[in-house]
Length: 374
Image (cartoon, rainbow, N blue to C red; front, side, top):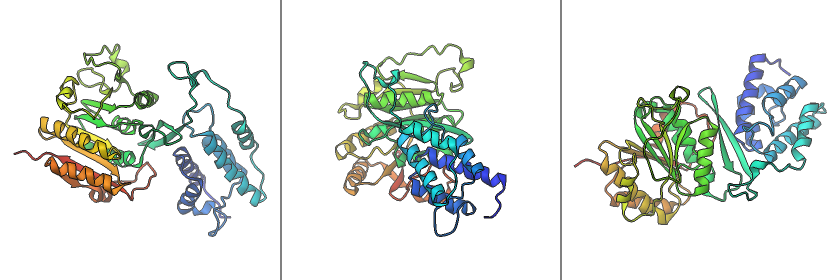
């Protein structure tokens, strides 16, 4: 075994922590680590990590931080990860760190019911959640997701990662702008926008009450102050109290981020005039919002309505093409509204730096959409 420097060991542990917190499939996690850190593996033909006790101690203290830490994924994932470690050590006839074994026993024990397992009405919430975390520009951010794909907006999808990458690598496009996101889901894009300073306004929208509640939760989990208009149509100024304690305010001392309900399925779009801030948005964002054929016409109608009202406004829509026929409907609706569409996927991918997110880009496209002025 080649001697490994402390610096390389720290880099290996940190990379493992990044992969672990994104809940990367264990075989993929191992393959990624082996490609990037081959010296930590026994040989070229297996994915057996060389795990001396010193390295196990680092994994125990820096990677497997369970139960009390909101940044950890799920008990199930942690269990699989520890099983991978113990099986590796057994094959190599090595001793397993005692603290890691204790954590494994804790994980497989029955989960005690907590008070916050109830919903707002006092009913027991049996939904299984996972918390995925990402290291972005020297800062950890975390998102609560549903563990099962029951509700579209309760999962962070690949297109949200692509759109977030686009924002991070093109920050100059967003500085000092008023931004509206359609279908904000778990809130990743809104959290990424908080890295950009200054911004005038960020309006995050969705329709499902459960999704909106989780969106608000994730923003606050990441210490982002919001105006909550989920159940309130009154957009009068909000008293934010001691402004010195709030980082994300604009120059007028208004809280930048707004979370509110927005239903696309409306025939009379003039209703949107009652929602202050929507009509004067410079940038409209959307990630994985092209998934239901019947919603395409409503989505495009809202895009047209908003782009028409604000000169030089633009939309960036990131979409995973799971069903070509559904995406074709979206493309046809865009064409029928005479909206200009530019596929900037390749241009973005060629110029973007390394992503903090691990996801499959193969079926994701990024459109820049605007209305040509006559």
